[in-house]
Amino acid sequence: MRYPADHKAKTRARILDAAGRVFRRRGYHASGVDAVMAEAGLKPGGFYAHFDSKESLLAEAIDQAAAAMRARGVPIPDGPSGREWASAFVAGYLSPTHRDADDDGCPLAALASEVARAGDPVKQSFEAALLRMASRMSTDREAPDDRTLAVLALCLGGLGLSRAVFDETLALRILAACRTLATEALADGTPR
Image 1 (cartoon, helix red, strand yellow):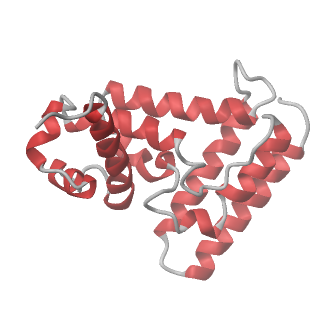
Image 2: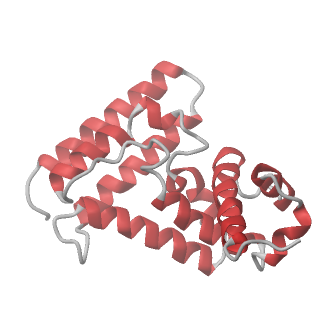
Image 3: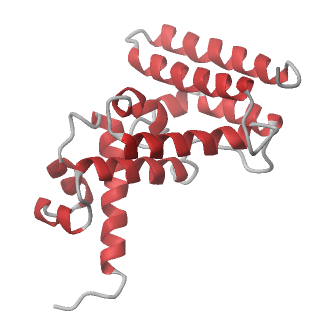
């Protein structure tokens, strides 16, 4: 049976999409290649025709998942970058809706602790996604200022903590407190 010319590329994209969901839902270390391939509707044996290793899959999945956040319902505002965009981003990013989107939410918040123990290619992919997000938030697109990096760290950490606690009231308080602090930091003026 002959496959269309774009079959391999489409299959690879399905695997990446499935990996992004599985890794965010279960964690990288708790997910095997079998689970990723099952999520993609494929047999595990075909994995190595597309990727050298599970870690190389993670590196690419982070990049694809970060790029696809808007398409998946993560509230990322349209329009120009900068402080106004960043304020709208903070409001959506630190929302209960995004917190509950563990399959399709931000891969940076979901995978930060696991990426810290990964190899250089995974860290480089994570860093590139982080810097792309920071450049959209910053008034200086070439070199995000320290305030922008701090606000982004507050967003990632706040989202992660709100997902990790049991008490719903506490989870909502964490989101609200981080939203308030991040918004105030952005409105505080020029970078220090």
